[in-house]
Image (cartoon, rainbow, N blue to C red; front, side, top):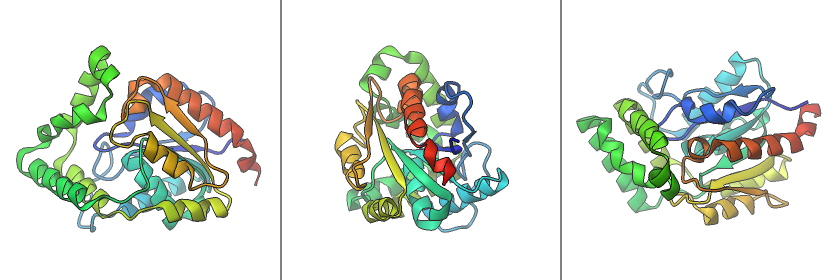
Length: 255
């Protein structure tokens, strides 16, 4: 029996990020909530920005779906939330798939840049996010896939300023998670890593570092011709990787 798969989306997008992947995962129970402040989810409210709050929301989504344990896969921001799930709700997580993300904390410069973006979006709206296209999407996508570029541009423009600012501040405050991954591995949680071959935000060195936190080292699946948003840039090989990983972990559903 294969456990349900939770898919957690990237910043500043919604669960639509995984449309092309989910279409290629027939027969697998997929739960893909919008994180607070994005898509159909409510605004963050007055809670202090913290990726742990996102993790609590994901646990609540599992409760609503009457799912006790799942494989949790997160891309970028979703990866940070996946690692927060291991800290906050370890009993709900049987395996993690870390996609185009990293386990290191932000540098001081990166935190300052996140605050600059948060302030700009609150003042000028989310069109201030458009320069992110150059780093969110790989060279191949920007050169050969105008439909994907247009779709991601629309997602950036449609993002809600309050959700964007809260997310930036939550990501800036997140801790390093290598110890979290090592502890999860020691407790029997499975791990796998997925990374776009053209991802310059969280590159293959970041992927390898996360993989080595597991014992034995987690497999790394490199997605060709994809940047940071691999799930929308090249969904077929992403779906293939997810099918292979979840099939290899079918025994988790019997424990």
